[in-house]
Length: 555
Image (cartoon, rainbow, N blue to C red; front, side):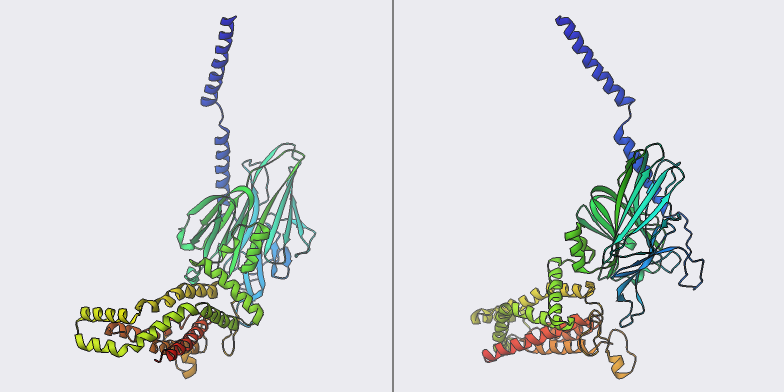
C-alpha cells in the first residue's frame, strides 16, 4: 500500500512538472499576448494623425467658400461654436466672455478651429481594433443626429452603425462652462464577440512658435500619476513622441490664458502620448482600456474634454467636485506656488469687495506693508542710526584714505559700539523678492486681471503702461527707453527712498546704488502696469514710514 501511495505521489509531481514544462516552452503567455495587442493598437493610434480628412469649411485665410457641411451647434453661457458631424470632430469653439482685443466685442477668442483655417485645432474621439474586418467610425464618418444644439441643459445624441451589426451611440454633454462629457455606447449584434480600444486626441497646428512667452509656460502639459509634466513645443523634435502611463490625470495644450485638455478616466490605466507629427503639427492623445463586448450586449466608455479659459477658481472647482487631479496646475504658478495662488485669491477677494482690480492691487500693497511693519520698522530704525553716524563714517574715511581694510575694520567697530546691525536693512528686501516674483506671476497668469482697467489711461493692468514717452513728446523712441508714466513715478519714488538711506562709503557701491533706480525704471517699464502700480505705492508707504522713524530718531 505504501509503495502504491509513493508511486501515486510521484506520478502527480511528475505530471505537474510536465504541465509546467509544456506551458513554459510551448504554452501561450497571456501577458505577452496582451502586451502585443496593446503595442499593435498603439501603432494604429500613431497612424490616426496621418489619416486623410475631407473638410468642407470656409477657408478663413482665402475666404474661399467650399461646400457647406453638416454641423451641430454648441451654445452655452461660456462658449459658442459647432461640432462637425463628418467625423464627430470638435473643431469650432470660441469663448463668449473674452475678446481678442481690448474693448472690441466683435472678435472673440477662438480656441478650436477647423482644418482649413490658418491654425487647425480640434479634438476627436474614436475606436481601434486589430480585427480589420470590423468597420469602426473614422475621421470621415458621417454621424446622424436629431439634435440641433448642445447646451448645458440639452445634450445631443449622435448615432452611426456599420453593416455588420455594430451600432455606436454618442451622447455629448457640456456644463455651463468649458467641460464636455462624451459617452459612447456600443451595441453588438454581429453574432460574435468584439474587442475594441477607445482613444481620444487633440491635434494642433502652430505656425509660429516664437509667439510663445517665456515667463509663462506655453506648450504641452500633463498630470501623470499626480505629478505635473511640462514640455515646450521645441522639446519634441519633428516625428518624435513621448509616452507615459497614468491612472487618472489629464493631458493638454497650454497657452497663457487658454487651455484644452483630455481628462483620463479615474481608476483606469491609460497610455498618454505627446507627439510632434510635422514641423508645425502637434498631437496629444490617450489610449483607453480594452473593451470586450459579447454578442447581444452593449458597453459604454466616457471621455472628458476641457476647452476654455484658465479661470483659477473654476479649475479648483473641477478638481474638488469633478475629481480631476491637480487641474489648477494648468496655470503656471511658478516656483512660489505657495505664495502665488494665495495672492491670487486675496486679490480676487479684494476685487470682489472694491469692484476694481487696480484698487485691489493698491490695497494688497498696503496690507503687505502693514504685515511687514514690525520688520521694516526695526530695519528703518537701524538705518536711521546709520544715517545719524554718517559724519563719523566720513571721518573714518578721511583718516584712513584708500586703506579699505582699515576703513572696514574701523566702521565695524563703530557699528558695534553704536549697536547697529548693517545687515538688517537687507531683510525687508529679501522678504520682498519672493513677494515681488509671486505678484509678477499672478499678473501674468491670472485671466481675471487680463483687460482689467484701473483709472485714467490704464485700461489693462496685465499690459505695460500705454502712455509712453513717445506718445507724450510725439517723437519715435527706442523701445527700451519708451516707458510709461507709472514706471517713471516708480523710479522717482525709488530714488527718494534711496536718498533716505545712509550712503555707502565705498565709491563703487555708491555708484551702483545711484544707478539702481534708473536701471529698475527702464527694466520694469515694460512689465505689467499692475505690478508697477503696486511697487510705486509700496515705495510711497516705505518713504512715509521711514520719514516718521527718522523724525522720531532726530535724523
